[in-house]
Length: 414
Ligand SMILES: [Zn+2]
Image (cartoon, helix red, strand yellow):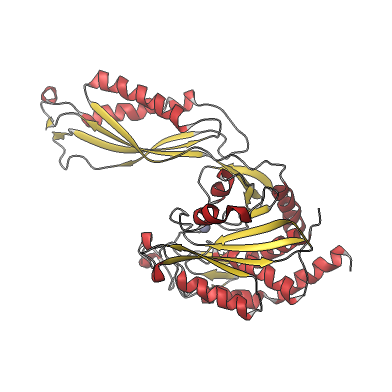
């Protein structure tokens, strides 16, 4: 059979699996896999269900890697790998999805039970249906389609189902790379379908560095009518907030891969100070969120911030302490011309008829964990991006057609 014919067969097969995909989504949504850090018991039940499901489908190459976590059910955070040998084992196509979901949040904002899927207007509503079960289902059913057609992918196809993506990946990809880094090769195709745009055009290849800072400004509390008797911490801190905007000028490089194309420096959270209007606050606490282009290091920014704090201390007679509550330099970017990007572009164009572009984003995805370990991972999926929100949903067409994208990649022989 010619390549086009084979792909048409696979497409037909995936379309025929649509109902099963929906049933699978319903079943896994009913097993909430919430991290202990978010008040749940972990992924055990959900992952065991998926493992059995795959075993019943006749898959044999399933490996389970448990990361110990005393807080979780059975003291374990299970990670699963499904291995399908390809025609060539020169390289491996990895598709990685995560099993955990975030908690449902405010139930009053949901129109339906978050853990019981409601199907309506071509969408599946429920917690986790989009993040990350849409892609999890697409990936699993790509493998099922190949299996049922008795077809081999061009290269090995390995599907990884990780734990703990939502709360830091320590028990998930972090654990796998710590203990099984040798599974992965530099030339492998690593796809993390956990972010994307509703028109399918975003291939995320780079992320900004991130630093969150807590500023505590200490002055002296006094009555508001006698300001000279105190030191107004809120006023000094406000001055610092304004001064910090100079960071945009100091770190002003542009990189068109990113949206937005520059580093960002924004004051965000503000803690309450005094409860009454006629008291001058002796202490003020605010927070700052910076996203840095890979051109800059977190330490460079912190050095500038230190200087600004000293200036405000001098001018207002306050003491300013700052500490980072999260800090990470940008991971090295996946090159825009790397095989994973090329394959994704080709497949996305074949299925969706659009031109997908390599892009950088400000938020962190788990792909950065791969990139820090020296592997070129790309993030792609076609989603409406309603993850973590009440009334989260998955567009059924996206779930089915993304599987065709994965299948197309599996059939590319370059
Ligand atoms: Zn996710």
